[in-house]
Picture 1 (cartoon, helix red, strand yellow):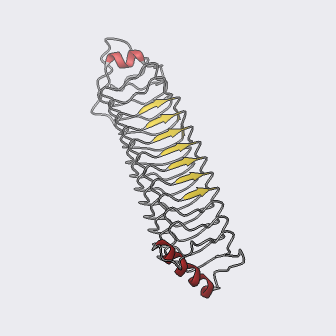
Picture 2 (picture 1 turned 180 degrees about the vertical axis):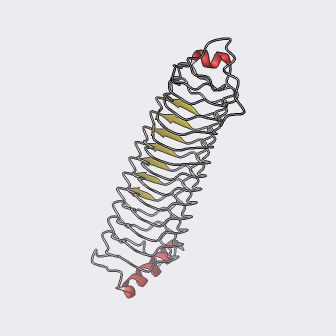
Picture 3 (picture 1 turned 90 degrees about the vertical axis):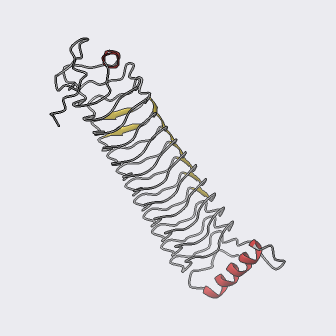
Length: 309
């Protein structure tokens, strides 16, 4: 298919789509759709059957692809800015250097997708499914990931500046060298996740579930984790200095050399004298009892002050 195909050339586009459907059905007259470099800005492709299609370098800016089947499609270097992809199936699709800025992808499936150097700035991914997806060098700045499913996702060198993770599920995720500056995520679930060399600066992740999280090289500057569950988490050497941890639970957590200087631990539950002796506290630390640190063995300040907020 020549690269000068345009969204308005509906006749030729319909021929391509019919031939592709026949190819999927293994009919003799079928032909796999190759729309590499095609110009399909604003094309009407709702519920289109494009599974396995080749769309390398195609321009689909503003295209309407809600409910489309793009599973296993090749979308490398494609331009899908501001496209409508609500409920679309992109599972197993190849997205390398793809542009999805401002795309509307609520309920879309990216299960087992491979996204490398993809730009998703301001993309709307509410309730999207990225289960077992691989994300490398992707930009999710200001993206909406509310209630998104990111179970077992592997993310490397990704930017989540100001992203919204409210009620998102990241069970068993592995996040390496990712940045969450000014991100929000109240009620997000990170149970069993691994956080390696990640940064949370001025982030707000209140009432989140970090049960059994394994963290290393994690830095959290002035971030708010109030009311969260850190039970059985491995937080050895983690930088939680200046973090707001009020009312959080730490039963069974490992806090060897964890930096809690200037952190707010007011009314935290499950902390033991041994945990606080192993961690780093200072006069700026607010201990569970409400007293100022550093923590002293035998002081009883590991007991929460239930009358304080």
